[in-house]
Length: 295
Image 1 (cartoon, rainbow, N blue to C red):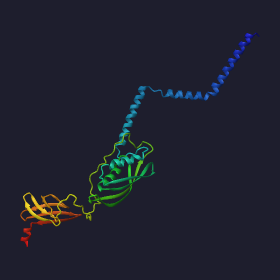
Image 2 (image 1 turned 90 degrees about the vertical axis):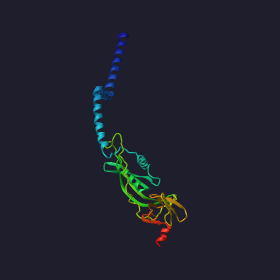
Image 3 (image 1 turned 30 degrees about the vertical axis):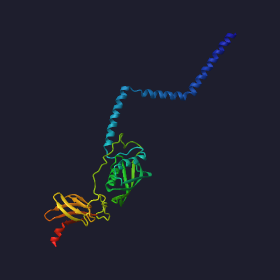
Image 4 (image 1 turned 135 degrees about the vertical axis):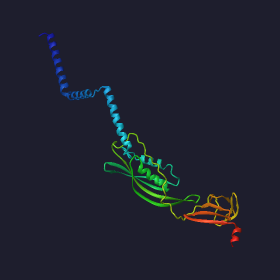
């Protein structure tokens, strides 16, 4: 056997060896990866939809989603998904923004709890407010679009005197509030629209019928107690208070704690009605000469 034939046989053997090794590597060691790639290719082929068909499916799903969202939006309450604790603080700040300066609301986070299939954050609200502001606060919490429940209430009367000495009759309160949320979006709308949280004025059930606190005469009005009727003129009546200050007053004009209700030119008298801490009192002043005639 010559050298040329030996070289040729050697090359053929080397080539066969390379083919065998490559086949073993591809079909034995790479078999798992090949099967994985093949399955992935089959999935891609199976989901290779026509763009027009995909567009039609998208429009149909969008329509169904809009219908479902409108149904949820029409419900009085929604339960949001994975609610942030900060959101309730923002809600209280927005609701209480128009309240009077005498009203104050403090918010404290207590805990996270579970109620059947839902979770809720528990907060404690405390402070003081006018009856009207407190009523609006309770109404806003109970009627908010995102479900909230007041679970406990404590109320008491407060009298706060301002820098002018005017008493303000407030309500001290403590409220426990549960703010509900869910781990999924089945009970929430895509775009939240808050309910109407405005309410009409309500009678102040905590305002005392009889009050020991009488507001001071900060507007320097006529104090009828101890006053004297000096003269009657077509335009009104001249009245002097117990300090000697003279006032010209007219029918319907405000005086300290009340109003001038009537000027009687026939009897030369003026009549007042006063509200002394819930006690209504009528006061009549007459000219000095009329008092003398009566005697």
